Length: 366
Image (cartoon, rainbow, N blue to C red; front, side, top):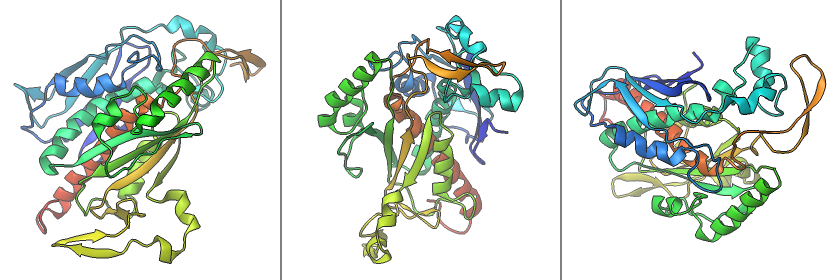
């Protein structure tokens, strides 16, 4: 169903923004991997609200509980259920939204599809749903560390509105990204980006931008032609995130400005390893990883909830007006970084297990 992702490593998220809690069930995790709640909590702390002055002030610890699938610190191979309880829900802040559709939100479309909706904080369409994804990705990273030691997944804010960061995907470090509250890899862009977000919030407005990501040390051979190409799977994973409006890999849309002579990545041998002189393919060719760094970008729209009155329509289909209330990010980009990393880990983990299942007897597992 629509709340599930993956084939061999399969997750199903559940829960609403202002319900009792949110979480995930993971099926297909290999047994005998070390796993504790602390492993998961580290990643949840990176995406939780209230972590800095430029994100939503909702006060949630997002403390996780492992309910099944782990015994004495080891995965059992059975379904792993993880719960995060909602502690600071304030559904009363959204009462007006029960009868008015928020512009650019999922309010109207959920009504159009289901005939009803949970209007408290957006319910299932809230970004709070991503808690389950991040929790599952912490488990996926355990699998990745076992099957592909040395693989590294990093994401960072590369642009907020028109303010561009200068970041080298081949050399940027997690320490640099996590050293600032914007989570950009360019120290010179930190303060200007913070000032830009604060200015928008002060005006009751919001901003969008781009998160860029790199996967270093990914083995060649991952991806399932024709419909489950690795870049297609990454695109689906990223575009399933709230507020996303675009995805490109490698040279992306800019590559259309080049000729084939200029764009092709020429092969060469480095010892016994096949390499490419350039990486305009972004580490994926024919939908299969080629061993080079996988590089892609995800576009996030400005946060839909703004503290300014806007024209809208009521649930009885009358023109009206609505001003945003509640606690929201003026810019989702800083908190989107760990979520983009999480979705990448989930896709790669699934494809590593699929590769092992299909090709493990005929060749060395990547």
